[in-house]
Length: 545
Ligand code: N01
Image (cartoon, rainbow, N blue to C red; front, top):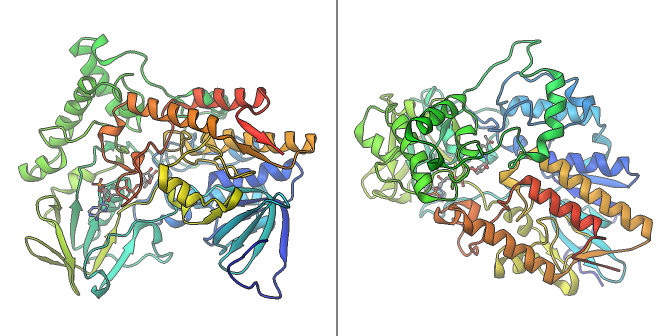
């Protein structure tokens, strides 16, 4: 029998579905469209009030995607032939407008419930169905449960002493108010220097009276090289756009570029520096993910990339103290093994008289006071404190839902005990008929979002079709295959330098979270080959009932 944990309101019926999809980012909206085309009764639920996933929530000043247009979009010609990008790296407003456009073209609204936050999902072993409940009392019974919740749906808040006593405005970057607060002339703190903190501080510094950035680890950010497009001007021709969609799954990171195909010391110093200069000038992730093949695998090679980056960066900062904090002489961690932010003026901003940097390693935050933040050195007064402190990335969005599989197995406890364990980064043993897009141990953060949404979304639709045709009720990953996949993911991760940096890539920063690679680093083509061969071998590694 099913225990719902609350008594549903009389007026709310259980809605019966073939599939329930969570999340209105790229993964969720693609899945809804794809499954509907295949004839399934499917609904999309989203805790926010609009489409876009992370782009619905992250409305902070400066928020923009680090993946370039026109590749950061769906491959459906109905969409790209009729959409015009205004920026090479679109901002959150443009991205939300794109999602609205997609919702219209794909007629998504009639099958979407907004303001619907799923709190629990339980596999009913007698009926072979998922019973899924939302905090607003909605209940769904679905054959397939597809939590495509994204990497960044579970926010991290510091547990500083006195945090509740602060009288000013404190806001997490991902709960940014829809009505932009007035930042002009204000005294503002930004805590955190990941991709969010870098974008935010840069934008805030342009309007704030005073800005203090609190840094724990320096960001090895690269220049974005933003481009604005005029009306009618296209980043590349429509014919080229079509070609790039065909090649996306061949790129290691789901982009239209790859590593250079040679190692750092295959070339002499002059060639290496000329190559670094060219990549650095191109902007985008080229200097990171389009550079020498061994950059993320050999510390000696990685150090060459760091040295070049360090000199370029130090040249932009006047104050030697800040230079040393932002781009230290001694390399603090392997370049590119924490997510590389793209910036448009972050380092130059520290030359302004109204911008300062506090290193919380030297002067830790002791408490939050009524007026601001007290470090071991002094009390800072602020009108606004912005937390760019990140997320319980990748797994947090899944483990924050009480998901129960066979024998009441808790997903949270499973992941808590061992770290994420999945088969092919798309399913996990003990949880039948449950698949996720951009979940743990898939390429996720190392794949262009829409590329993997389509690749995984199509695979999930295919498996559902095959089961429907065969009259099979359920499919579940087997533990042995899962163990092999986890070992493979870990062996690729540990052949790289990634584990040498503390970052959310390895599950760091969340108390009690087991340290394990959150993503598959083996590249989109290898991942796709694995998914395809699993399917062509009759979904090898899964059991059926
Ligand atoms: O979060 P993060 P994010 N005291 O976890 C610091 C995607 N994204 O929101 O590095 C002081 O990367 C923490 O310090 P440390 C993208 O994939 C994409 O920036 O742990 N500092 C770190 O500096 C990205 O990687 C886009 O030592 C504290 C920062 O907070 C992911 O989302 C834009 C602290 C958190 O950095 C997450 O990025 C934005 C504390 N108590 C984000 N706690 C685009 O595509 C944490 N920190 C543009």
